[in-house]
Length: 252
Image 1 (cartoon, rainbow, N blue to C red):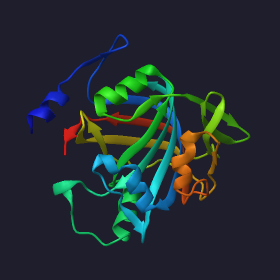
Image 2 (cartoon, rainbow, N blue to C red):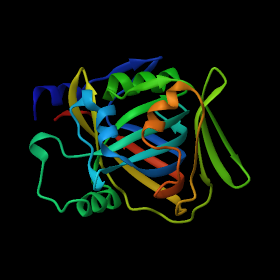
Image 3 (cartoon, rainbow, N blue to C red):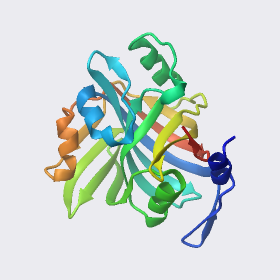
């Protein structure tokens, strides 16, 4: 264990009158998820300054996940979040032999693949500061509207009353999912780190391609248009109950 690893493992943060440490717990909430096929060269360009490279799911294609989370009970407060992340190749010495494309899909299905969150609007200052100072996530404070109507859940990101994006899926599910702890890459103090997000889901619904992504005219949506969005996701899902634990960051 490195000195940097030990320092973060034992660090305590004082944020908005709360004392926070690792692992950080997220007790309840729900989420809507979509995985989209996008051009890998454009995705790599969008994250070029991180040193990470996207994993290929097909020739010239990579996967972008959009996950809208409605947190109702967490150590970082209750808040809304829209996480846009690319699945990325193992960093540095963690590279391993693999079967092109198939290995990426198997890792996605099994919850083993690393991701790098490229854009992460949230709607509370506590959540923003937790993400930035504890893990190096690119969180920004934004307006996010959440609603459940006509059997669908929808999250909308607005800037100055103008739509950036919205995403909705059917708000139904009855399955339990296997616990997973995928690696999550970030830049903390301008250096690459990995944390592990242990995820437990219930009331899970898999809804094929029935996810509806809409983009507004606001310039913040332009990078998504560069990626060829909006379009139907490859996979859409709803999680009626979630429980997370986020580990301390470790240097890559």
